[in-house]
Length: 263
Length: 210
Image (cartoon, rainbow over all chains, first blue to last red; front, top):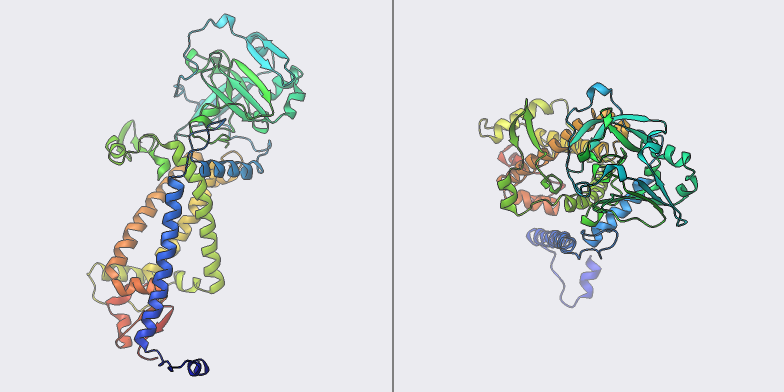
């Protein structure tokens, strides 16, 4: 310290205690203000950042969508077919099953003309009747149906496991692809599913609710029940199933929700 | 809180009668925030990383630096915290002697860490209830975990309000010392047992003794 002082032309006086205090206060408050400004600025930037370019997903600010997609990649690592959704005794299932939306399943249609259309990646198209599907082994599932809105309800569904359906009709090669897309007959509602979730052993093509055929408003005659996803992915009244390597379009992902929406 | 803006699921209903709706219609209208669930979720799933990492770094810092000794409640803290409370409410004149933090602060600052860990665990339990089914089980099921997660959020609001009020009451010198890491004491060391006990931070004491 002394040497430094001597090099200056005017020898500096030793700082008084008050000066030291002021100097340290100044340094710390400047740092505080700068960090605070950076944090606030960062938040404003994120809050006002541009919306993503509409595509398969839309409606979310671009950096937030990137975060959702990265988070999906992180959490897909822990996905396992061995992790099953908790099941309950039938007596606990709701008698009055909650019905949230009619999008894509309110169009009038003649149920006798309903067919399940399956589009393979090779371009081949298949059609199935409800009786063909009902002839496969039935799986029953009583689980807690979970909605992004925050509610959950124990429901009792019956149908054929999607993986059983795939194996029975020789579609095994299609499971090598990345995604499955499903749409309602009127194309009003559509979902995209990653393959591991689609072939999870509890994913059902359901045709029964509380041991009765599914009522019209719950997606008569065949709907998707996929317990490893939120309700938004549980499409009512399946019209078409498409296998693909590209992400199929998804109704709520276009409205700003996470594409994966896995549980 | 963004995530709870979605709809009216957050309410207390007992035997079919709704007692409290946490977010009644006037709340949405007042803040102009109708139906922004998707946006709320997107923010939530970005900031969960930030808050969790921040919490981990903070805990590591207190462990490595030894600061945890000042923060973890001692045996006497629970009794003393009550005296601090009485003192702060102006019922009792003297506050018990303390180190860096008083007994009430020790309890509060440790509780907030436990609450934070609780939020991460219940959060994961409701975020991936199938993949982390064991966490959901530990938290008493999906529905209960959701309630805890929400209650903890209300707890943070409560903590935040008290915290800010206390900082304001403690005065400028205390706030200055929080930012700069040292405290200016102009008078006798006796001050420590006097009302200045709100002091949050006195890493070093720069004073006349220098």
